[in-house]
Length: 417
Image (cartoon, rainbow, N blue to C red; front, side, top):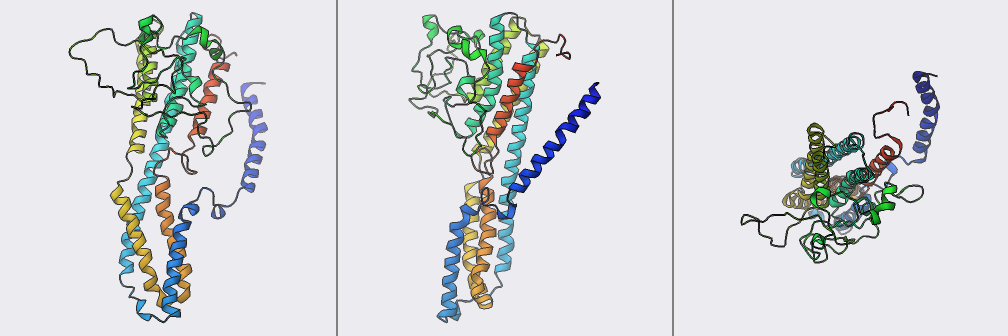
């Protein structure tokens, strides 16, 4: 059977099952107009109830008590409707643009992580057992960057997360301003900058036998219930910033020289974990280049991918740290509330008691648009409509595991596996 016959047989065998599973999923799911989970209904229901009670009270005054003077002209409401519609449209469009940009940036991150994993695995030779361990560690750091970025964007600091800590080298101490741990190189135990990825053979033997260990059957959590477990968050500048992440207190060797032009150490220096991972991988590539394992061209390609990861991280930081200005959000909510509070007075004379369901419908629509904008404003969180970052990271983990366990790292007989 030639390659084309194998491909045709694969298509014939896989297509029916694929379409059957998709059809079953569609039959089991609710139509979108009947869904509550993932919608803004739970968020806006209290506001709708308040508007309904308020409108009912207006109806009681006009119909039951005979206070006909509460009815006012409808001449102003159309003009306000146009202005409010423009405000809501701008809010929703801006939020969706941020959401879509976040997805594009994560796509760029995924592409660069895949390229890095492929290039490192195929192009860096393994001459000794130590070379293999170093390359395995770098492969784990490539995956660790994506997972660390996920936690960093969610403001989950430190490394004590079930999906992150085992990917980092042993004795990893994240950058922190709290210098409670002195460099163990003073005692002859630290790895230097050129040995940033050299493993501790006594502590890391079991960890390097397998790229990673996961729960039996894989991690089936969704982004909603896949919050970190066994977590001790740390914040930059905290007096306990190092304690939750230190495994043995070793750090990379500091600079060898000092001068009068050095920046003063004011005890507030810090670096995010994703940036530190990029820094460590850069040191590894510099070490590989210095020892002649790779040439300048390959090193420049890797550095370019690392720079792209840095750009993706900076752009995602911009989305997280630069929300829509508060003055716009406040004015929109105030205008929306005043508009819905004024409408019953203009419609009560014509609709009578029908004004209550009419206002319920209007408040559901307007409050819903505003709530949608607020929910997708930051696409990196845990809301139902946020990006499934845990799923994305799990896909990268499976791909890197496949590279390590099933693909050769040398070009000999690559197509005759």
